[in-house]
Image 1 (tube, rainbow, N blue to C red):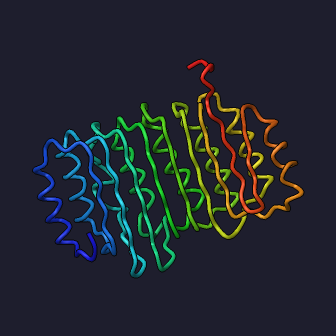
Image 2: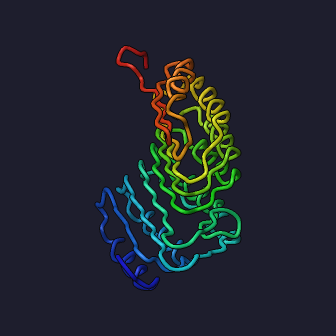
Image 3: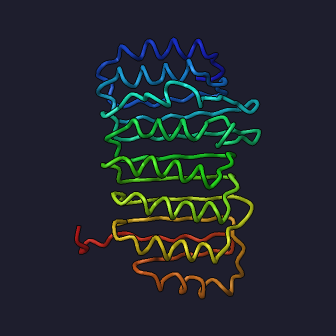
Length: 265
């Protein structure tokens, strides 16, 4: 749905509330308007109404300006409604022309988003893609903490593309993972111009590979800067960790662990 004003989107929400048997919803708004409190309240009413909805794909594409919505004092944060029927959520947030802020005084408001995720009390998987959105370490911590409170949560897939993730955020990510003991698989892709420190990536993999609950993980970091002659040494370095496989190129590193068929559950 391109170029819709907020009142038009709310009209679509009203119509969708009548689709009582809807099992999955793919929601995409291109050139989205600034989201207000009325919009978020309408979304929650819709999701509460659709009792059979188990899968949601929400694409939010902002192409003009930097949106801002201060939600800290809204009732939604203090008295969120539960959405126990939701099993899978996929969320894509894209600002195609300008930078935006995820955290405090930013367009999404990480506290709002984290509280929203906690509403999905039976959520099993989350897939998120964030493009041109600055993540701070406290934002990552708050997001992963919300997943830690969900007893059935097992699968996490995050892509952060051109988001200026640094070594501190990498530390926050692995610490946040340690607070989700029910997690079974995690995928994390980082593509950006500034490379992450190899020392921090090595410590990151060391910690993650020791998490007994994880049956599968995939980590991809690009753009790195490696010399071709160093690639075999780098791959061997990571293969010393338990069940870790490594594949390198001069500009990227891919690290993964897949549960073998003979492994116990």
